[in-house]
Image 1: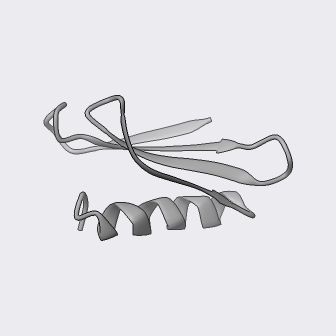
Image 2: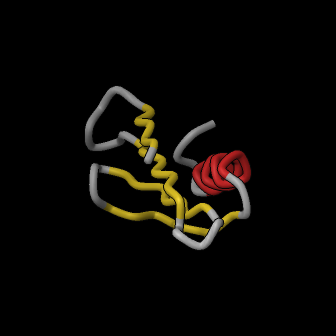
Length: 64
């Protein structure tokens, strides 16, 4: 499992959680404040999961 936190304020921090789903695909979540899930998804590869999570965070105006 990988996890990256972006931001310097815990309340505004954005975390991407990327993990294997167990069926050969990759599950991702975009989280703020340490526990609030903004969105989640499933991708075919780990790089695609990272890209989709980043795109979702940008769409939600959480990152640039």
